[in-house]
Length: 150
Image (cartoon, helix red, strand yellow):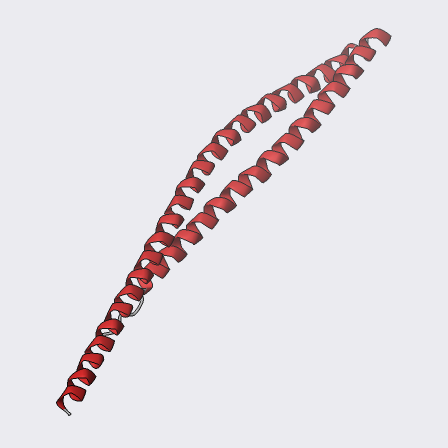
């Protein structure tokens, strides 16, 4: 009786690897989005500094209230965008922590599936070796009995 490897374990390993890769891709995507958000925040910071410098220069040179109000409003809009970007970064950090946790769980599932599949294959190999030894012993015993009858 020859046992065949059960394909269920190979499918389980495959599904676990696909799930792990999916979690890894999600984490990589979050890292990319975070980097884009940091770049955007840096750009906003530069614009904010530039317009604050212009505002200070404008206040020292002339007292054009309309232009000063326009600059002030733009600075407030930049500050609002900066605050939203900071909140977005905090949310992305939380999302990344959750994604890392999911990835670790997925990696544990992969290791468990790999272990179970290896254990199953080892059991099949051990069973096959035991059957082969028994068959060899039986043949040896038959040959011994035949030789002793002569």
